[in-house]
Length: 110
Ligand SMILES: [Zn+2]
Figure 1 (cartoon, protein in one colour):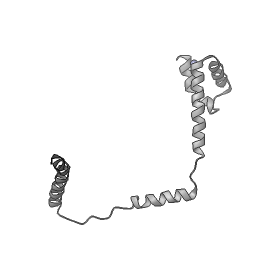
Figure 2 (cartoon, rainbow, N blue to C red):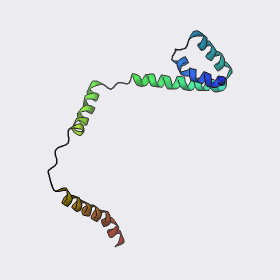
Figure 3 (cartoon, rainbow, N blue to C red):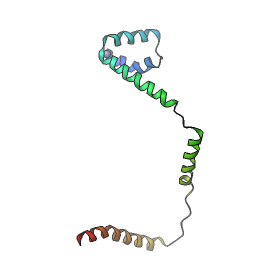
Figure 4 (cartoon, rainbow, N blue to C red):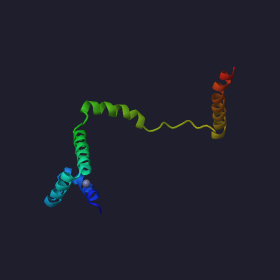
């Protein structure tokens, strides 16, 4: 495995402080010499710190309750539909759909 590939797979753990002393030293040495991996490291550090700031962005309880209150009507169980002979309704719906699909074109043609 090329050294850069090996280093970039370890950069995330490096940023998170999860590498052993010797691996850490390896990464530090390589990043000191390799501009590509240094850029990669800077990128990961940036993303990592952005993720940390997202973790702390918890909605206030009142906002959370307001959102949940708005969601509640949507997740309510569906009301039972009135029973109708399905064949007749489907045909009428199809006709209505066809008529409304044709209507705009008809008015444009005039
Ligand atoms: Zn490199």
